[in-house]
Image (cartoon, rainbow, N blue to C red; front, side):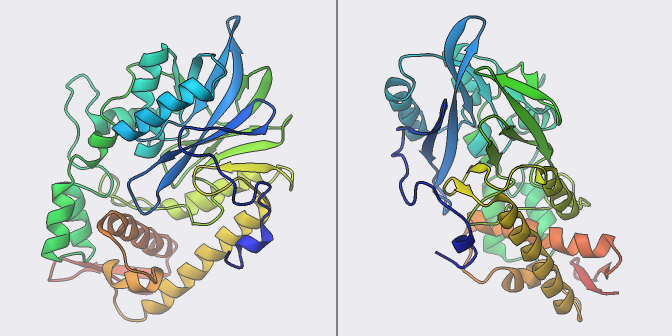
Length: 358
């Protein structure tokens, strides 16, 4: 356990559910884990006991990616974790593949409606090609021809890396092959009644267009999605779809929405273990990004591209999946400093954007 984790409390220690199994964490709240084929090898999903229109059942929060092994885990969960009751509703915190990938399958299988923010629903539809034309846009986040050009502009010109990024042009659509054609909109500040309890909706920005976390004051439970994670920092990236984005200040400002939650709130994150210590963890994240920004600013005493800064920000070897997100995060830190006037930038003769201390 690293020193930062030592200030957090893990009520269940290292205990966690097997894939497709469930653990009860609070009254009507169950924890399910599903596999991911990445270095980050799991996602946590949540089952909330519900009653809608006189029917007893469950609301599912987040879905996993669309892979045969994940569908098989869900089938196990249907048999063993639902007490013989149906899924009544599917809530998705945001549009990243591990969260929305199987929403279409779950909604169709159970004839259950999808609940999601408008921004994330629209982008998921766009990236899957689930639109009127059924044609996905070029690229999606860290993959595809457009992403390769975007990263080349920021210094990632290695031919092998460029070829691999281009090759993964269908990365999103493979993990999220479809999205339901209808949905119910989730909005910041509203409440969603689940099982007779109100869950307050908290929008967050920077990680996704309009990420929704859910807080139940009655249970003092927060489903934080990817906005607050116990072991890793939330990825904040600039990708090709919005190349002039400045997401890091949006993310840090979004964390203020959790200020009024109790110190002992049980946090249910999408990755890692449920924990207590919300405000301590948020303070750690604010410190983390302040330190990274200071390191980037110091490195930019001479002109630096985002690719030049990868060793400054990441002290480990990056695989191809991680490389795209690392590039996105390096650009995000450079943009935060550039847009507040601490850095200048220029397009050099070799076609690469470099930043330098103002």
